[in-house]
Image 1 (spheres, rainbow, N blue to C red):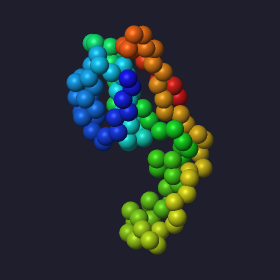
Image 2: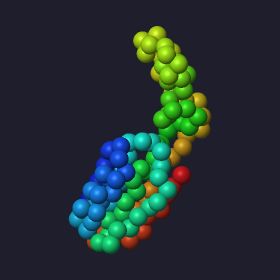
Image 3: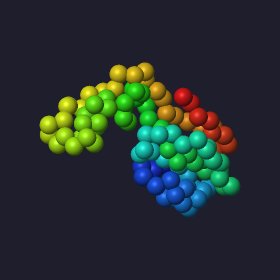
Image 4: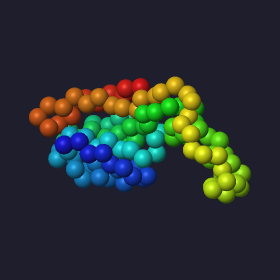
Length: 112
């Protein structure tokens, strides 16, 4: 079993991974779109990454062009801000590769 844990708090994802250590092959955190550096192999064979990162275009905010969000921060009401557009940067990949044997992860590596 691989769990996609979509939460803001790294501590919450870490606590969950420790709670299911040995019952799940991996807990892959998502939500912030910013990959976390440490890749963990817990004692009983559960892999943990608190945020795998985003797959999508770079150069903006979470894959979107920054113009709309900059205007909102500057005080423009959302309904008057520019429309949401996809960022124009190169596509980035946020992923990990897991080696799983008999329901336990033996290795985890980041793919970018």
